[in-house]
Image (cartoon, rainbow, N blue to C red; front, side):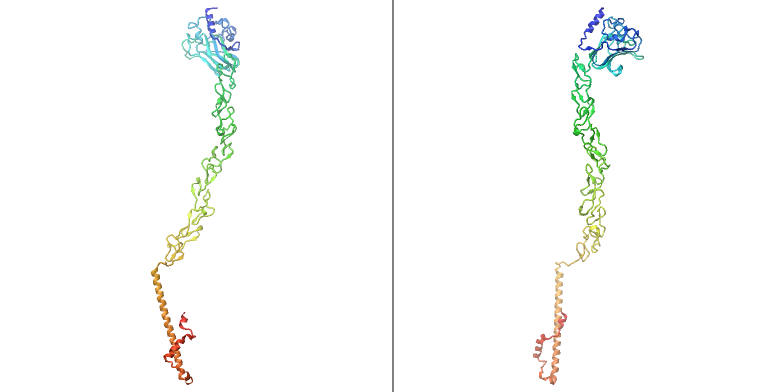
Length: 504
């Protein structure tokens, strides 16, 4: 055994691991094998466990053909395993390794991938050499790559029209003698001796050293997937948003269902759906109002009408008629003077029971025409108003008072003289008194003259009888004062009506 071989063995023994080499005797493949058909250069030489002869003709190395632009070799681990690290032993031809060794240039710029297919681009890039040169690249490369996969893929290239760093070979090669892959065959185990099981909520695999999950089962998160999804998230990697659960509670961390049902305005098992047009409220059971400005269009949560209410309606849900003497759009118009001050129609403002006295029209918002007042404006104002028929449209009171000789609020009463007009009353009474006195005097004179006439007539009769002999026995001197007085005293016995009696 040469000194170079001994040195290589000593270098290799520095890598002491408890993980198992899971690459031994697994299927391999390479592109462009040197001297195809000769097993001395076969791709499987890299996993036969032999690395004592690092020369091309020792039957322990993989050798590729000359003048190739790409070089590919892959190892099939036959199932997905948990990988910790990879060791690659380069072909040295058992010579001193370093810048003087011509094979160092062949390995510069190589890449290693872990994939679940033979396509490297489907997998994970573990390492791409951009740092080594012919003096620094080691003969045994240790690549730590704690991932899971089935294929380990070695790749190098020397493409045309690409400028590569100084020291790179002109063509690409797969000249190495052994590839060792250390890890756990069971991808659900971790630890230095693969004795620990991955956390239960890991999805398939965990990190081979720490046990951290590469991916959690749906509904879980955390390094060991020990935490349930929260903050209104659920499902794969806790990336899905919960629906609107009742009172905004957390949905089920795995399937997203709302355990207590949906909040107002949402429905469905996941409550990720808003109410369909025309519905709102808890589980979308309520129907939007017909009185919305756009019928049955409302906020799916609150039921508030979109665009407000139809004319004559108010409220958040447009479920209340206009009141308070208001009507119309947004209840912004004021009712007229309806009878008994009742509310007008909430939509068109009409007074269904008629108008108060003094008003007319369907909405009772017009006062009576000139000359009319009262209920239904059927009563006429007084002709005795100062301005004819100019009266108040409600009460009928003359606006400017009455014409001369008339009084009252409607000027239908004849005016009487005021009691405190004492000069007029005094002189009136005095005149009446004088007239009465004059009448009495005249009557007394008339009575006196009438009675005197009667006395004279009787006296003449008596005188005539005294001249008659047959009647001389009862002669009386009618001219004697005593007889006259006697006749005067007997006037009360006269039966004929007097002039005074006639006048009375």
